[in-house]
Image (cartoon, rainbow, N blue to C red):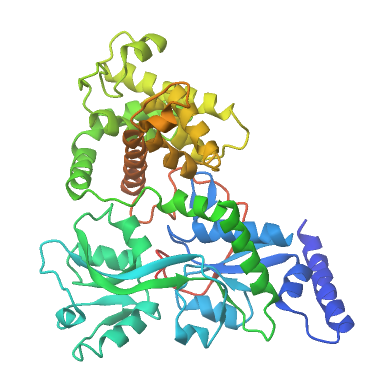
Length: 485
């Protein structure tokens, strides 16, 4: 197979040369992409950009780039930059067509590359450690140990803030990523750092002692960076792609998948969960792992359900008669052949099997229900009942939404509490607000468990690695991690 590689490269060169010879002008960037048959995208490994998850490559920028390559009818080739500063270098050197790595559009960067339309809005947040005095203005940062990612947009914002606070100083760390700098603030090595709001929403669950002091900037646009050319056909095509994704709801669905469950934060609850992970989960972890293997479900998701249901208390009981680690009702226990609901083995085994049954049952409703939406719907059915989930799907459809998407289902759930809506359903009234919070909490617990079991670089090393169908090529030295803006 290897001996044909030079032939393939030669064929590509001939195709490009032919294009150059037959055109009176140099090929556009779009024509170059199509002639090569691949879209070269430089990105970074990050929980908010691109990483290898349980089922393969994931991340907002990865999914956007993959769908754009499909639109163009070409393959996606990822170039993984290990330093933030390498992103624009790869673009300006012509080794990549697009930089898709959560880049914030700034005047300084716009002089070096072309930017496409914005696909997300974030703010820059000044982060400090709980227990220290909260800074409220840039002047309060004077004298603090401030570390930020080198060459990031945070540096530009700090320079602007220095006009208000002339004594403001900071360190530009050339090797650490934003996630590492949050760790440094959490352990007291640094006093302050600056990160984007979406990145902080990810890491705050792992470091509940971190707080936002104030926003250094608001409404920053995130966009892809392109090679600077006199023509913008590739940028125009990317703009049309994003417009189509907005119109279809695909963009909102994508952002909800990664950020939809992170809108609220419970400091005390998160601290307790981390303590219980250390003190209580070891007694039951083997049971969750065994149940996960039997049900073909990540054991950490089953454990997250168990924590939401009972805080891993095998004898917990609800006012309505649910009992045990997985809070099985008498009817569910009978269905699953459980003799003793307070027995953790029986409870965890039955709960995981019941969740598997919900997933299978829902998957038979429509072939278009993809993961992770299928799992979130199964969790909702576990909590409120399969019939009420069907009602929520009907309401979502009546409202013009897609019943196969969780982002539309979770909007419909609270409507099951309103008479004008539940009277149109078969199963009637349900506490949809509670179910929506139930799924959100489990998603948060699951994310924390992944981070705790796989370490602080969980997005880089999944517990069960899978082979990526995308070939990622390294670009430049350094340490990969969470993206700055």
